[in-house]
Image (tube, rainbow, N blue to C red; front, side, top):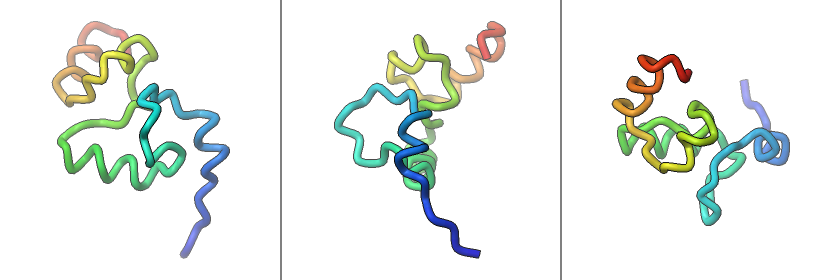
Length: 69
C-alpha cells in the first residue's frame, strides 16, 4: 500500500528547532536519518530537551528515568 506523505501537516506538529533540516515534515526520512545516527528524532523529546540537540538513546532514557517523558 502506498501512502502520500502529509508534509505540511507533519511540519505543523514537528518540534525540531534545527532550521536548515531538509527532512522536516518528511517523517520517514527523519526517522531513517536519526536511526542511522543511533539517535531518536526531535518529536520524541520535550521541547526544552529537544533544544539541546542531544538525540541520543541515553539522553532519552535519562529523561524517562527522571519522569520527564
